[in-house]
Length: 320
Image (cartoon, rainbow, N blue to C red; front, side):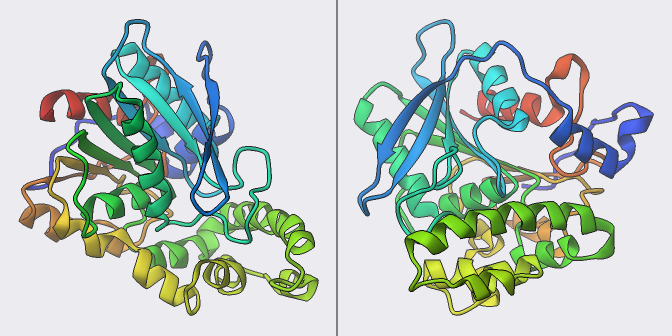
């Protein structure tokens, strides 16, 4: 489909991409959401923790929510989305990727942008409940890349999976990495690297033959982390091989269900290759919105319901 127009127009101060990004990440608060945790045991012996919240009325619809790099199911962009969907009569299953629920996962591997096998495990576990007739998937940042890759891969999607939404999606992972490693994003990259490296120390104690303390100390950049850990732990040759194989942009032509990407023009994390205009124009199932403002996951709007959240709900209501 052609690129969709956006009427998103925040107050003056939040037209600054960095301010909207920082405010949304550090200062937004979501009150009144009750979540119930379920541990999903995976076929490889690992686990994923799911945080469920429910509509007040019994629902046959559920949205799977996927967080971003070093996020979790309690981040405001996830809990805000869950609360908004719940108010619209849709249950929410917020996924904590491996190692992101407050407990180190059991295996040397963890999560990454292209780990659609874990998303599929969540979908299959929901289908086994035989409770929901409609499943939607909404991913944010890294989770958005995973959601779009899942929808476009060569798999037969369950009929219950009706629509996919991605917000602030790094459709080309290498392009996004180069932006993150630029001077304008120094503080963001430093924060991400700090959290990622901290998680390597428990891994090193559990798997000393797979990663050494000297390996960890050599991680100076986000790309180093992907060269030293992500690629090694998940079967890629190196960081570049990981980016090339897991970027969702190459899978967008294969999407066969209604799918929406919302990427702000002033998102400092996204390079030019992260805006799939051509793919959206050629694929009748793929919709793209590129608001002028919003930064990275910073689509601030009145009543603490973000533009991206309102748009996602309207999309599934209109498309399904």
